[in-house]
Length: 202
Image (cartoon, rainbow, N blue to C red; front, side, top):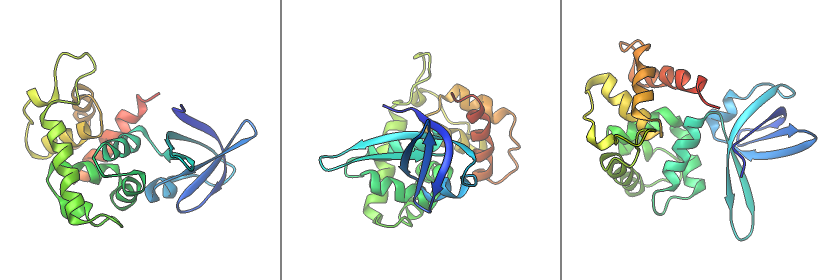
């Protein structure tokens, strides 16, 4: 229903933010990294959104960028993983470390999140890696799938696969990595590429 909400930050806390948009205050649940990146109250802010509708409530979730929202949506696509667990994973790892954990089969990092067992962490990796290998994340033009393109290996290959896990087309992720210093730690490489990709986001 909502793609993003932009307005004045009326209130913020560790797990929530309220954006005043045209006199209406939209309360959103946010991850710890998103909350930490929020500006001061009264300043302008833009959060990407996802709405969760349950029998007893409607909840609006806010994300600092499209990569974080994509990571959340990937997580809740895993059977048995709900919004609460997905937000816990993002709070513990952030979008970049989560994607890298999936690509590198690092279930221990994912299991660091509150409420996430080792078994659940392994399941998250298994299901998302299966999707990646099956080429479910297709290029925008629909011509080529992720599964049909071999990873280049090394830092660039792992960073590329991580960006694809976050829902970015492989070609766009490749272009973003062209201008990134690949001697940096891999999590920093991913963050720098996300900055480039974020500039092209609507």
